[in-house]
Length: 368
Ligand SMILES: Nc1ncnc2c1ncn2[C@@H]1O[C@H](COP(=O)(O)OP(=O)(O)OP(=O)(O)O)[C@@H](O)[C@H]1O
Ligand SMILES: [Mg+2]
Image: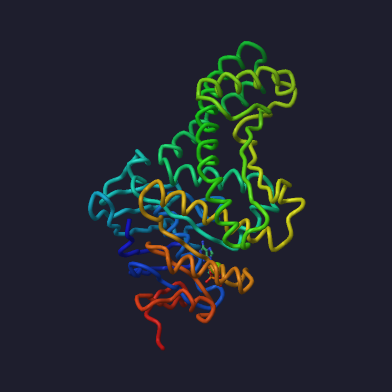
């Protein structure tokens, strides 16, 4: 996939803007609060259909406007396409060559993006939701059908939770089977992507820290069972865990195990990183996680995904910043970086690097 041009309307602080990223590196430069991250957020939404940092899609609509729109021309395996997303009170609508699409996997086919952001530090220190998001995003970049499967799971979860709060007993049972089926599919996807990511994580971490400590990642479903085996086996295990917890779930009125409560264990030298890893190791781990996703997609798709790097240089020490910029400069793909200070990203810039200035939500040529 190659992003040729991007156009935004009433998206965050952008009234209207258009820009053409270069085939390799594009740097969005601007002072704080000008809209650099907003532009990356639009590109991320276009290429993954997921918000980058917003918890509600409505946050993306410019204050005072009713509707936000983002559009991009991309060259993909099937030729040039125009992808678009509009957001309004009714929700999100994706379009392909101007036509609304309901099958999101059709839209996402051939699109993949990985974003490095300063918030990534929370992946190690923060709660499990960030780590679940990491796994799920890695999974649907890999298999676009995952987006629909995750929605189906949430629907089944809501239905069972409602049943738990309503009539007890046999009523819950009829909601357990669909939840177990949808849950098993998610567990298998997360397991599969975690297995794929693990060797890439170890390699990236070794590269950053120059050998020595080992980084590991492992996924364990929240029901206390193992994640190996086929989908039918996982479904049976998950259904059994749900059955065992039924009395407790009825008492509390919600489902107390399942993919919505999973975690991803990150470890350095066999010990939980959250508790034992040093600050520098945690940063190296976070960087390695993102690089692992890029490398995994690159191996699976035969080309790197679109890389988005939001102001990462300001968060990293000089050695890690140099490592990352060197990695990006060598990657045979497209990357969009944001920075407040041109000097920080200069090491990654080559002759083809495109510099663009972002001022008050407008994108223009850099005058220098
Ligand atoms: N829905 C919205 N409507 C209008 N403005 C918004 C909306 N959401 C955020 N903003 C504004 O967008 C501005 C720019 O945000 P953005 O995070 O993109 O800046 P930035 O260039 O990345 O800055 P920094 O270098 O500090 O990260 C902020 O001033 C914020 O108030
Ligand atoms: Mg920003």
